[in-house]
Amino acid sequence: MKKSIITFAAAAAVGLGTIFGGISVKTEAASISSLKGEQNKIQNQRSEIKSGINQANDKISKLQNQQADVKSEMKRLDLAISDATEKIDDKTAKMKETKVQIVKLQGETKVIKERIEKRNVLLKDRARSYQETGGMVNYLDVLMGSTSFSDFIDRANAVATIMQADQDIIQQHEADEKELEKKQTQVKNDLASLQKMLDDLKQMNQQLNTQKAEKDKLLAVLVDKEEQEHEHAMDLSEQAEILAAQDAAIQRSIKQEQERQAKEAAQAAQAAQAAKAAQAKNNSANGGGSGGSGGGGSTAAPHVSSGSFTRPAPGVITSGYGGRGGSFHWGFDIAQSGGNVPIFAAADGEVYVSHYSSTYGNVVYILHNINGQTYTTVYAHMQRSLVGAGTNVKKGQQIGVMGNTGDSRGQHLHFELYKGRWQYHSAINPSGIVPL
Ligand SMILES: [Zn+2]
Image (cartoon, rainbow, N blue to C red; front, side, top):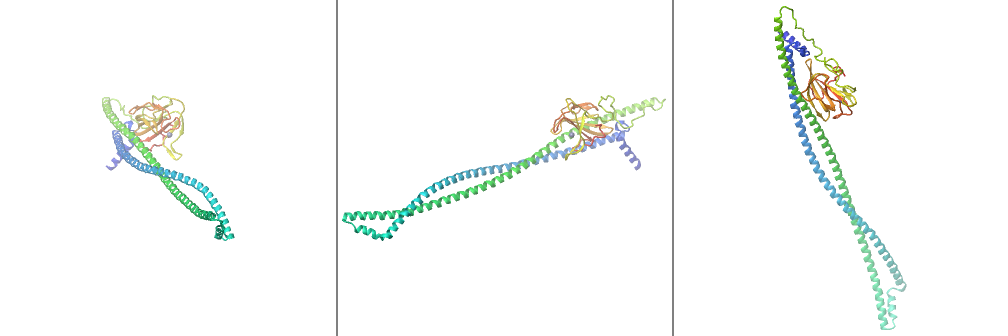
C-alpha cells in the first residue's frame, strides 16, 4: 500500500515535466494544485508588501515630523543668529565711535599736556624767582617801594592779580589733570566693556552657527532617510503591482488548464469510442508525448531558434548575469544601435505587465508555461512596448522596440529570466536555458 503511494507520487513528480504532453490526468491535477500553491504564496507576499508599504509610510510621516521639528529649531537659531549679528554690528559701530573719540582725546591730551608743560615751566620760573628773591618779601618790597598811596594801590592790585593768577594757574592745572585722567579712564572702560560684549556676542554667534550646522546635518540625514523610505515604498508598490498582475495571470492560466483538461478528457472519450468502433485494426491513436521540447515553432521567423526559448533581441551581449562593480546584475544586456531594433518574446506566454517603471523604463513581464514549468521573462528599457497586459504571445513575436528608458545608459535590452513566478531579486542565469 505505502509503496504504491510513493510510486504514484514519483510518477506525478516526473509527469510535471511533461504536462503539455497530456500523459496523465493526475499530473495535471498536480499542476493545478502547484499553481494554486503559487497563488497562495503570491497572496501572502502581497499582504506582506502591503504591510511593508504601510510601515514605510509610517516611517515617512515620522521622518517628516522630525524634519518639521528640526526646521522650527533652525528657524529659532536663524532668528537668534540675526539678532546676535545685529548686536555685533551695533557694538562694532560703537567701538569704532569710541576709537574715534580716543583719537580725538589723544589730540586733546596732547594740547592739555603741552599746556601743563608750559605752566610747569612758568611755575618753575616763578618758584626759582621766589627762591632768588625770598618769595613773598619780594611782593612786600614791591609794596614798600610805593611812592604814593595811589601808587601803593596800583602795586597792591598788581601783586594781588599776580598772586591770583598763580592760584588760577595751579587750580586750572589740577582741574585739567583731573579731567584728563577721568576722560582717559572713562574711554578705557568704555572700550573694554565694548570689547567684552563684542567677544561675547562673537562667541555666541559662533555657537549658534555651530548649532545651526549640526541641525543642517541632521536635516540632511532625515531628508536622505525619507528619500530612502520613498524609494522603498515606490519599489514595494511596484512589486505589489507586478505581483497582483501575476496573480491574475496565474488564475487565468489555471482556468485555461482546466478548460484544456476538460477538452482533452472529451477527446480521450471520443478516441476511446472510435477505438472501440474500429475494433478490427490494432490500436492506432495511442502514441503519446515523449517530453522534451514543447509544441509550436513551425512558423518560426528567421531569428527564431528551435527549442522552447529563442533569443529575445539581436545585438551583442554587453553584460552578463552576476556581480558587477559591487552590485548584482540580475540579467543579460543585449545592445544594438540604430532605430527600430525589435525585441521578441523569448517563448510562448502571456504578457501580464506592460508599464513604465522609473528603474526599468518601459518594461514587459511575460508568464510562460513550458512543459509544466512556469517561467517569467522580463524585458526592460524598451523605447516602446507593442503589447499590453493580457496579450498572449508566441515565441519570437515582436513585443517592443529596443530603447534607453528608465535607469539605463545607452540603448539596450535588459533581459531577466525567473524559474517560476517573478519575485524581487530572484532572477536566474538565463544562459543554458535561453539561447543568448
Ligand atoms: Zn542589465
